[in-house]
Image (spheres, rainbow, N blue to C red):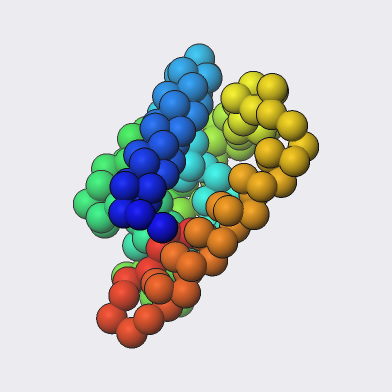
Length: 154
């Protein structure tokens, strides 16, 4: 394949990601959530609680940014922090009551945003897109498992 083909595909992938991200941002804003807060709440639901360091890794941000995010979320009652009883240096973060309510209010939101974007796509087009994206993610995962590579956010 020609290099310009890759460049066009990469540009389209970035544009599509930005388009969906902006739509999701608008929908989350209606629930008084930022995209980062919503993603952090999803991580807390998936993990049942985690450390700020693991949260930073999963969100693809540095520890300082994750700490500031968690500070704002804790002030709003979306999450709670507690020190480990075994090792006081370890801080655990878990969903707060308002965080759980926010997740319940936004349940299925991503699926609805994607459904709107793909409402005119055929089943064959969606199957082809899924196959291409699956290969892309698999290839990225292989490369991030190489020595010296920090890995992809989960």
